[in-house]
Image 1 (cartoon, helix red, strand yellow):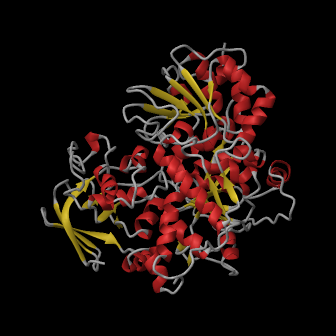
Image 2: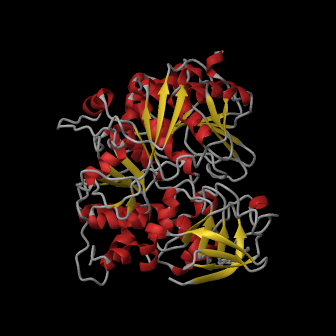
Image 3: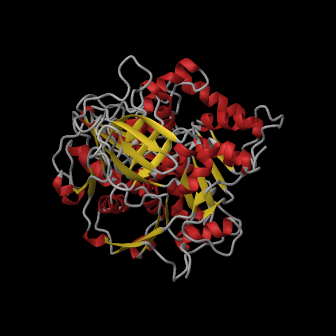
Length: 186
Length: 430
């Protein structure tokens, strides 16, 4: 696992549900075909209402039209990020689009576990509400050892909650690597 | 200090005398359920074994359930190919709890599991579907997981790295008014505690209203617990559970109850007086945007949907048929009905409900998830409004991000079908 993650932030509101992250109509692409797999990136966060896509002003697409990846590797969410379906395609689509880490006030459990188990994206919880303090496009830097988010653009620093029980899985890479390292599977 | 029901179940499933909230455990699994997304699980499962030289065999083919319901019959060649791939895997592995697209065995996974006796009190049940919470209605700890986690369950027979959740005790007392149903109770609860009110926690349902409720109604409470964020929604097993398992599910072997201790510690207690409730409506686009029906009466509806893993059971169809019998679905409104399983479809046929629906102008669809997930069987047009007994009203949920979905009980759906606008069934429908 990298120690420092940095890049531009993409800011979202509360209750970003799995249909907003990847609508059901796009769940058909093959994961083994690299060309089809890219489509998950293309449609990541494609159903977030435009006025709420890229806060505070909205109107910013996570992945621009005709593109398959994002310029925003760090997602700043509000409360209950990932609520809804158990589709693993949700954190997976974010990863394919180029997301590295999400910092949200809270998560829905299944999304949170999926993000960790597949090693798709790191789901950090913030100590305080951040989606009204960080703006889409701000340069941010996350220190995974100190659990701190630095907004480089404003030079403000925020604490993140330690990753806790899920850290061994994230460090192993995913649930299977974790199981292998702990000799549970061959 | 005593244990909650989830603590009791997890202690048993890990062969420990007790577990504490926050402990990380690896419980053995009694039932592992998937639907069409088994195709994704198969990929992951085969990946685990590739290059190891080991034969990829699931841990116990009798404990894996696979039910086709999300896209039945296949809406595209891609889905049909997925179905085919899953069938081949099922045959190769000898998976016994497989329900194909067939009139003699098919239906929605969250109806097929209980009605076939696959769920027992005290079981640990996992499913690659968020509404796996449904099976808590029979006193099991049942929760949704993703494909990667399921692949590890297929390999090991346990769920890795599960935190023992805290529990919210919801006590529901009072008699429901006519036309007010378990759906209204759970919508009210979600509105009260919010869509994240129970995140990472279990809801335990108690109180006289729950004790007097049929299993069919309890399945509604547990089904939608996930819409408040709950990991699981559990009703402690009782005489009614036993009745359902014996009479409906045909279970003949011994049934053991796992119940919460009287001195269990709860993180929060929520009380609901069911006698005061009127019909409840979840307005667009979050399930916790709940209003009493009085606040939204009269809104024009284009499509009415009765069905899904929430409200497609025989008693739901009975309420709707009783309201619709001899009446007509309003012009400019279309009505779709999806029984939750073919067993229910056949019972509804025998009771005459299906004829009541068709005569009223409704379209009776094949059992399955139907339009709920928004990929087939009833998409909405731009700016159209759906009133639906399903469980999610997220933007785009029924196939169009420029449409609105309102959630309601079967009685409200049926009454509104006749008028074409959101209608309170308690006020009478003429």
